[in-house]
Length: 77
Image (cartoon, rainbow, N blue to C red):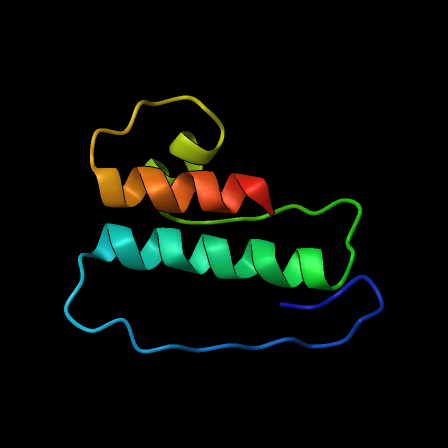
């Protein structure tokens, strides 16, 4: 990921044995946190997880409490 100033930002974390959906949502949370830390006023997040993208945009409803928590965390940043 690159900041508006062109600074390259990378991050990684060990998630253990989690589903691909939890990994995708966790990545979105991390991206939103970096954007907030960098005080980005506007951002476009592109993802290949249809569930994560649609949930974050309010297009689909989530029932998994772990994914719900991650989605709301991403939205709060």
